[in-house]
Image (tube, rainbow, N blue to C red; front, side, top):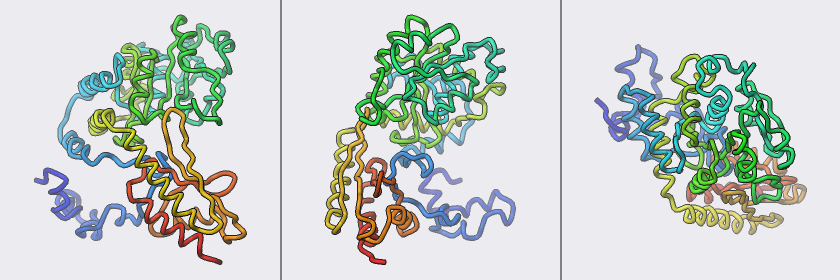
Length: 404
Protein backbone atom coordinates (compact mmCIF):
# COMPACT_ATOMS: atom_id res chain seq x y z
CA UNK A 1 0.00 0.00 0.00
CA UNK A 2 1.34 3.43 -0.93
CA UNK A 3 1.43 5.57 2.19
CA UNK A 4 3.06 8.86 1.25
CA UNK A 5 3.97 11.34 -1.45
CA UNK A 6 7.52 10.02 -1.73
CA UNK A 7 6.23 6.46 -2.18
CA UNK A 8 3.73 7.69 -4.76
CA UNK A 9 6.45 9.30 -6.82
CA UNK A 10 8.84 6.39 -6.54
CA UNK A 11 6.04 4.03 -7.49
CA UNK A 12 5.79 5.35 -11.02
CA UNK A 13 3.30 8.20 -10.74
CA UNK A 14 -0.08 7.19 -12.19
CA UNK A 15 0.78 3.56 -12.84
CA UNK A 16 -0.73 2.40 -9.53
CA UNK A 17 -4.17 3.59 -10.70
CA UNK A 18 -4.35 0.72 -13.17
CA UNK A 19 -4.91 -1.69 -10.26
CA UNK A 20 -8.19 0.02 -9.39
CA UNK A 21 -9.63 1.49 -12.59
CA UNK A 22 -11.19 -0.55 -15.42
CA UNK A 23 -8.92 -1.57 -18.28
CA UNK A 24 -8.18 1.25 -20.68
CA UNK A 25 -9.14 4.12 -18.36
CA UNK A 26 -5.56 5.12 -17.53
CA UNK A 27 -3.88 6.80 -20.54
CA UNK A 28 -0.61 5.17 -21.48
CA UNK A 29 1.26 8.47 -21.22
CA UNK A 30 -0.03 9.02 -17.68
CA UNK A 31 1.61 5.81 -16.56
CA UNK A 32 4.99 6.86 -17.90
CA UNK A 33 7.49 7.57 -15.14
CA UNK A 34 8.31 11.27 -14.81
CA UNK A 35 5.40 12.69 -16.81
CA UNK A 36 3.46 15.35 -14.86
CA UNK A 37 -0.31 15.62 -14.77
CA UNK A 38 -0.14 18.92 -16.66
CA UNK A 39 2.10 17.45 -19.36
CA UNK A 40 -0.40 14.63 -19.79
CA UNK A 41 -3.16 17.19 -20.35
CA UNK A 42 -1.07 19.36 -22.62
CA UNK A 43 -1.14 22.31 -20.21
CA UNK A 44 1.92 24.48 -19.62
CA UNK A 45 2.56 25.85 -16.10
CA UNK A 46 2.87 29.61 -15.62
CA UNK A 47 5.40 31.90 -13.99
CA UNK A 48 3.12 34.22 -12.03
CA UNK A 49 3.80 37.95 -12.15
CA UNK A 50 0.11 38.90 -11.86
CA UNK A 51 -0.47 38.24 -8.18
CA UNK A 52 -3.21 36.39 -6.32
CA UNK A 53 -5.47 35.87 -9.34
CA UNK A 54 -7.85 32.94 -9.02
CA UNK A 55 -7.88 32.40 -12.79
CA UNK A 56 -4.24 31.25 -12.76
CA UNK A 57 -4.36 29.38 -9.44
CA UNK A 58 -3.98 32.30 -6.96
CA UNK A 59 -1.03 30.76 -5.11
CA UNK A 60 0.93 27.59 -4.49
CA UNK A 61 0.01 25.53 -1.43
CA UNK A 62 2.71 25.13 1.19
CA UNK A 63 4.21 21.71 0.34
CA UNK A 64 4.23 20.69 4.00
CA UNK A 65 0.40 20.76 4.02
CA UNK A 66 0.16 17.85 1.63
CA UNK A 67 0.97 14.92 3.97
CA UNK A 68 -1.63 16.04 6.53
CA UNK A 69 -4.26 16.64 3.83
CA UNK A 70 -3.51 13.23 2.34
CA UNK A 71 -3.88 11.66 5.78
CA UNK A 72 -7.20 13.48 6.30
CA UNK A 73 -8.53 12.00 3.04
CA UNK A 74 -7.93 8.44 4.25
CA UNK A 75 -10.42 8.52 7.14
CA UNK A 76 -14.11 9.17 7.68
CA UNK A 77 -14.81 11.80 10.34
CA UNK A 78 -17.73 13.92 11.50
CA UNK A 79 -17.45 17.17 9.55
CA UNK A 80 -19.34 18.95 12.34
CA UNK A 81 -16.75 17.83 14.90
CA UNK A 82 -13.93 18.77 12.54
CA UNK A 83 -15.35 22.27 12.01
CA UNK A 84 -15.78 22.58 15.80
CA UNK A 85 -12.17 21.73 16.56
CA UNK A 86 -10.60 23.64 13.69
CA UNK A 87 -12.89 26.59 14.35
CA UNK A 88 -11.62 26.73 17.93
CA UNK A 89 -8.01 26.86 16.69
CA UNK A 90 -8.75 29.52 14.08
CA UNK A 91 -10.70 31.73 16.47
CA UNK A 92 -7.82 31.66 18.95
CA UNK A 93 -5.40 32.70 16.21
CA UNK A 94 -7.58 35.60 15.10
CA UNK A 95 -9.09 36.67 18.41
CA UNK A 96 -12.77 36.09 17.66
CA UNK A 97 -15.44 34.08 19.49
CA UNK A 98 -15.71 31.49 16.72
CA UNK A 99 -14.61 30.62 13.20
CA UNK A 100 -15.28 28.15 10.39
CA UNK A 101 -13.70 26.99 7.13
CA UNK A 102 -15.51 27.96 3.93
CA UNK A 103 -15.09 27.78 0.16
CA UNK A 104 -12.97 30.89 -0.36
CA UNK A 105 -13.81 34.46 0.62
CA UNK A 106 -16.93 34.41 -1.55
CA UNK A 107 -18.20 31.34 0.27
CA UNK A 108 -17.51 33.04 3.60
CA UNK A 109 -19.35 36.18 2.50
CA UNK A 110 -22.36 34.17 1.33
CA UNK A 111 -22.45 32.09 4.53
CA UNK A 112 -22.14 35.21 6.66
CA UNK A 113 -24.96 36.94 4.78
CA UNK A 114 -27.16 33.87 5.21
CA UNK A 115 -26.45 33.97 8.93
CA UNK A 116 -27.50 37.61 9.17
CA UNK A 117 -30.66 37.11 7.10
CA UNK A 118 -31.96 33.68 8.11
CA UNK A 119 -30.11 33.15 11.38
CA UNK A 120 -30.58 29.68 12.84
CA UNK A 121 -34.31 29.48 11.99
CA UNK A 122 -34.84 26.20 10.06
CA UNK A 123 -37.81 27.60 8.14
CA UNK A 124 -35.95 30.71 7.04
CA UNK A 125 -32.85 28.68 6.13
CA UNK A 126 -34.93 26.47 3.84
CA UNK A 127 -36.70 29.46 2.30
CA UNK A 128 -33.91 31.81 1.27
CA UNK A 129 -33.22 33.33 -1.27
CA UNK A 130 -36.94 34.09 -0.73
CA UNK A 131 -36.48 36.76 1.94
CA UNK A 132 -40.14 37.75 2.29
CA UNK A 133 -40.73 38.82 5.87
CA UNK A 134 -37.02 38.62 6.74
CA UNK A 135 -34.44 41.35 7.10
CA UNK A 136 -33.50 41.68 3.46
CA UNK A 137 -31.42 44.85 3.05
CA UNK A 138 -27.63 45.02 3.18
CA UNK A 139 -25.95 48.36 3.73
CA UNK A 140 -22.82 49.13 1.73
CA UNK A 141 -20.62 52.10 0.95
CA UNK A 142 -21.10 53.02 -2.71
CA UNK A 143 -17.33 52.98 -3.09
CA UNK A 144 -17.27 49.33 -1.98
CA UNK A 145 -19.60 47.89 -4.62
CA UNK A 146 -17.74 45.22 -6.61
CA UNK A 147 -18.32 42.03 -8.56
CA UNK A 148 -17.64 39.88 -5.51
CA UNK A 149 -20.67 41.28 -3.66
CA UNK A 150 -22.65 38.86 -5.84
CA UNK A 151 -21.95 36.51 -2.93
CA UNK A 152 -24.11 38.84 -0.82
CA UNK A 153 -26.82 39.21 -3.47
CA UNK A 154 -27.07 35.42 -3.83
CA UNK A 155 -29.07 35.43 -0.60
CA UNK A 156 -31.85 37.48 -2.19
CA UNK A 157 -31.13 40.78 -0.48
CA UNK A 158 -31.21 44.36 -1.71
CA UNK A 159 -27.96 46.35 -1.60
CA UNK A 160 -28.51 49.79 -0.07
CA UNK A 161 -25.69 52.15 -1.04
CA UNK A 162 -24.55 55.02 1.19
CA UNK A 163 -21.69 57.48 0.89
CA UNK A 164 -21.18 58.93 4.37
CA UNK A 165 -22.10 58.65 8.04
CA UNK A 166 -25.26 60.72 7.74
CA UNK A 167 -26.60 58.54 4.92
CA UNK A 168 -25.68 55.40 6.86
CA UNK A 169 -27.69 56.57 9.88
CA UNK A 170 -30.69 57.33 7.68
CA UNK A 171 -30.51 54.02 5.76
CA UNK A 172 -30.15 51.77 8.82
CA UNK A 173 -33.56 50.41 9.85
CA UNK A 174 -35.45 47.30 10.94
CA UNK A 175 -34.98 45.75 7.48
CA UNK A 176 -31.16 46.02 7.64
CA UNK A 177 -29.69 42.53 7.92
CA UNK A 178 -26.04 43.68 7.99
CA UNK A 179 -23.46 45.95 6.42
CA UNK A 180 -20.99 44.69 3.82
CA UNK A 181 -17.65 46.49 4.13
CA UNK A 182 -14.79 45.99 1.66
CA UNK A 183 -11.54 45.93 3.59
CA UNK A 184 -8.15 46.89 2.21
CA UNK A 185 -9.20 50.16 0.58
CA UNK A 186 -7.40 52.69 2.79
CA UNK A 187 -4.11 54.37 1.92
CA UNK A 188 -4.67 54.28 -1.85
CA UNK A 189 -5.39 57.47 -3.79
CA UNK A 190 -7.63 55.54 -6.18
CA UNK A 191 -9.83 54.56 -3.21
CA UNK A 192 -10.68 57.81 -1.39
CA UNK A 193 -11.98 56.44 1.89
CA UNK A 194 -15.28 57.97 2.96
CA UNK A 195 -15.79 56.00 6.18
CA UNK A 196 -13.66 53.68 8.27
CA UNK A 197 -14.93 50.38 9.59
CA UNK A 198 -14.65 51.81 13.11
CA UNK A 199 -17.04 54.63 12.19
CA UNK A 200 -19.51 52.14 10.72
CA UNK A 201 -19.35 49.99 13.85
CA UNK A 202 -19.95 53.01 16.07
CA UNK A 203 -23.19 53.76 14.22
CA UNK A 204 -24.46 50.21 13.71
CA UNK A 205 -23.47 48.41 16.94
CA UNK A 206 -26.10 50.21 19.07
CA UNK A 207 -28.72 49.28 16.45
CA UNK A 208 -27.78 45.59 16.52
CA UNK A 209 -26.83 45.55 12.83
CA UNK A 210 -23.80 43.31 12.16
CA UNK A 211 -20.86 44.45 10.04
CA UNK A 212 -19.23 41.89 7.72
CA UNK A 213 -15.76 42.81 6.44
CA UNK A 214 -14.54 41.32 3.17
CA UNK A 215 -10.87 40.98 4.13
CA UNK A 216 -9.68 39.28 0.94
CA UNK A 217 -7.41 42.26 0.18
CA UNK A 218 -6.04 42.56 3.72
CA UNK A 219 -3.37 39.85 3.74
CA UNK A 220 -0.51 40.16 4.48
CA UNK A 221 0.07 40.58 7.37
CA UNK A 222 -2.01 38.24 9.52
CA UNK A 223 -2.32 40.94 12.18
CA UNK A 224 -4.81 42.77 9.97
CA UNK A 225 -7.36 40.08 10.82
CA UNK A 226 -6.58 40.44 14.51
CA UNK A 227 -7.08 44.20 14.27
CA UNK A 228 -10.53 43.67 12.78
CA UNK A 229 -11.38 41.27 15.60
CA UNK A 230 -10.12 43.72 18.22
CA UNK A 231 -12.22 46.50 16.66
CA UNK A 232 -15.35 44.41 17.24
CA UNK A 233 -16.15 43.47 13.64
CA UNK A 234 -19.02 40.97 13.73
CA UNK A 235 -17.91 38.82 10.78
CA UNK A 236 -14.56 38.60 8.96
CA UNK A 237 -14.34 36.84 5.58
CA UNK A 238 -10.96 35.90 4.17
CA UNK A 239 -9.33 33.65 1.57
CA UNK A 240 -7.21 30.69 2.57
CA UNK A 241 -5.96 30.02 -0.95
CA UNK A 242 -4.21 33.27 -1.81
CA UNK A 243 -1.34 34.78 0.17
CA UNK A 244 -2.05 32.36 3.05
CA UNK A 245 -1.18 29.52 0.61
CA UNK A 246 -3.73 27.03 1.87
CA UNK A 247 -6.01 25.04 -0.47
CA UNK A 248 -7.12 27.38 -3.26
CA UNK A 249 -10.77 26.52 -2.72
CA UNK A 250 -10.65 27.36 1.00
CA UNK A 251 -11.53 30.42 3.03
CA UNK A 252 -12.52 31.31 6.55
CA UNK A 253 -15.32 33.14 8.32
CA UNK A 254 -14.63 34.38 11.84
CA UNK A 255 -16.59 36.46 14.30
CA UNK A 256 -19.49 36.28 16.74
CA UNK A 257 -20.33 32.80 17.96
CA UNK A 258 -24.07 33.12 17.28
CA UNK A 259 -23.44 34.22 13.70
CA UNK A 260 -20.87 31.49 13.02
CA UNK A 261 -23.31 28.91 14.41
CA UNK A 262 -25.99 30.25 12.08
CA UNK A 263 -23.57 30.35 9.12
CA UNK A 264 -22.76 26.68 9.57
CA UNK A 265 -26.46 25.78 9.59
CA UNK A 266 -26.81 27.61 6.27
CA UNK A 267 -23.95 25.62 4.69
CA UNK A 268 -23.05 22.08 3.70
CA UNK A 269 -23.45 19.40 5.04
CA UNK A 270 -27.01 20.67 5.71
CA UNK A 271 -28.89 19.59 2.61
CA UNK A 272 -31.76 22.08 2.44
CA UNK A 273 -29.67 25.24 2.62
CA UNK A 274 -28.47 27.89 0.21
CA UNK A 275 -24.87 27.03 1.02
CA UNK A 276 -25.15 23.31 0.32
CA UNK A 277 -23.41 23.63 -3.10
CA UNK A 278 -20.43 25.32 -1.40
CA UNK A 279 -19.13 22.11 0.11
CA UNK A 280 -15.81 22.15 1.93
CA UNK A 281 -14.11 18.78 2.41
CA UNK A 282 -12.15 17.44 5.35
CA UNK A 283 -8.90 17.80 3.40
CA UNK A 284 -9.52 21.53 2.82
CA UNK A 285 -10.52 22.08 6.46
CA UNK A 286 -7.26 20.52 7.64
CA UNK A 287 -5.23 22.32 4.98
CA UNK A 288 -6.69 25.73 5.80
CA UNK A 289 -6.13 25.26 9.54
CA UNK A 290 -2.46 24.30 9.10
CA UNK A 291 -1.89 27.08 6.57
CA UNK A 292 -3.32 29.64 8.99
CA UNK A 293 -1.14 28.35 11.83
CA UNK A 294 1.94 28.67 9.60
CA UNK A 295 0.92 32.01 8.13
CA UNK A 296 0.33 33.63 11.52
CA UNK A 297 4.00 33.07 12.38
CA UNK A 298 5.61 34.27 9.13
CA UNK A 299 8.17 37.06 8.97
CA UNK A 300 6.22 39.41 6.71
CA UNK A 301 8.98 42.02 6.65
CA UNK A 302 11.36 39.42 5.23
CA UNK A 303 8.78 38.45 2.61
CA UNK A 304 8.37 42.08 1.57
CA UNK A 305 12.16 42.52 1.34
CA UNK A 306 12.29 39.57 -1.07
CA UNK A 307 9.45 41.06 -3.14
CA UNK A 308 11.28 44.40 -3.25
CA UNK A 309 14.53 42.66 -4.25
CA UNK A 310 12.78 41.04 -7.20
CA UNK A 311 11.16 44.34 -8.17
CA UNK A 312 14.52 46.13 -8.10
CA UNK A 313 16.09 43.37 -10.20
CA UNK A 314 13.34 43.75 -12.81
CA UNK A 315 13.62 47.55 -12.79
CA UNK A 316 17.39 47.41 -13.19
CA UNK A 317 17.34 44.78 -15.95
CA UNK A 318 14.72 46.53 -18.06
CA UNK A 319 16.17 50.01 -17.55
CA UNK A 320 19.22 48.87 -19.56
CA UNK A 321 17.07 48.40 -22.68
CA UNK A 322 17.06 51.63 -24.75
CA UNK A 323 13.65 53.30 -24.83
CA UNK A 324 12.24 51.40 -21.85
CA UNK A 325 11.14 53.19 -18.68
CA UNK A 326 10.46 51.47 -15.37
CA UNK A 327 9.00 52.47 -12.04
CA UNK A 328 8.46 50.48 -8.84
CA UNK A 329 4.92 51.14 -7.65
CA UNK A 330 4.04 50.06 -4.11
CA UNK A 331 0.32 49.32 -3.88
CA UNK A 332 -0.14 49.95 -0.16
CA UNK A 333 -3.68 49.80 1.14
CA UNK A 334 -3.56 47.68 4.25
CA UNK A 335 -0.86 45.49 2.71
CA UNK A 336 2.19 45.98 0.50
CA UNK A 337 2.16 44.75 -3.07
CA UNK A 338 5.26 45.56 -5.16
CA UNK A 339 4.69 46.18 -8.84
CA UNK A 340 7.05 47.29 -11.59
CA UNK A 341 5.39 49.43 -14.27
CA UNK A 342 7.16 49.03 -17.63
CA UNK A 343 6.47 51.48 -20.44
CA UNK A 344 8.01 52.21 -23.84
CA UNK A 345 7.48 53.99 -27.14
CA UNK A 346 5.61 51.36 -29.13
CA UNK A 347 6.50 52.86 -32.51
CA UNK A 348 10.19 53.10 -31.65
CA UNK A 349 10.43 49.50 -30.42
CA UNK A 350 7.99 48.14 -32.94
CA UNK A 351 5.83 46.26 -30.44
CA UNK A 352 2.64 47.07 -28.54
CA UNK A 353 1.96 46.22 -24.92
CA UNK A 354 -0.72 43.76 -26.03
CA UNK A 355 1.75 41.98 -28.32
CA UNK A 356 4.37 41.87 -25.57
CA UNK A 357 1.91 40.38 -23.10
CA UNK A 358 0.84 37.79 -25.67
CA UNK A 359 4.42 36.78 -26.43
CA UNK A 360 5.15 36.35 -22.72
CA UNK A 361 2.06 34.15 -22.41
CA UNK A 362 2.69 32.13 -25.56
CA UNK A 363 6.44 31.75 -25.14
CA UNK A 364 8.69 29.48 -23.11
CA UNK A 365 8.54 29.78 -20.19
CA UNK A 366 4.93 30.94 -20.04
CA UNK A 367 4.74 34.21 -18.09
CA UNK A 368 1.62 35.99 -16.79
CA UNK A 369 1.75 39.78 -16.27
CA UNK A 370 -0.70 42.64 -15.85
CA UNK A 371 -1.41 45.45 -18.32
CA UNK A 372 -0.34 48.92 -17.24
CA UNK A 373 -2.49 51.93 -18.07
CA UNK A 374 -2.37 53.84 -20.29
CA UNK A 375 0.55 51.92 -21.84
CA UNK A 376 2.88 49.07 -21.00
CA UNK A 377 2.78 46.10 -18.66
CA UNK A 378 3.24 45.46 -14.95
CA UNK A 379 5.19 42.79 -13.09
CA UNK A 380 3.64 42.02 -9.69
CA UNK A 381 6.26 40.76 -7.25
CA UNK A 382 4.01 39.12 -4.71
CA UNK A 383 3.13 35.46 -5.36
CA UNK A 384 5.98 34.43 -7.65
CA UNK A 385 8.91 32.28 -6.51
CA UNK A 386 12.40 33.68 -5.84
CA UNK A 387 14.37 33.28 -9.05
CA UNK A 388 11.37 33.68 -11.37
CA UNK A 389 12.62 37.15 -12.23
CA UNK A 390 15.65 35.79 -14.11
CA UNK A 391 13.91 33.88 -16.94
CA UNK A 392 11.23 36.56 -17.07
CA UNK A 393 13.80 39.28 -17.78
CA UNK A 394 15.56 37.07 -20.30
CA UNK A 395 12.27 36.79 -22.21
CA UNK A 396 11.58 40.53 -21.95
CA UNK A 397 14.99 41.33 -23.40
CA UNK A 398 14.35 38.93 -26.29
CA UNK A 399 10.93 40.47 -26.98
CA UNK A 400 11.79 44.16 -26.62
CA UNK A 401 15.08 44.09 -28.51
CA UNK A 402 13.81 42.10 -31.47
CA UNK A 403 12.93 44.37 -34.39
CA UNK A 404 10.09 43.42 -36.70
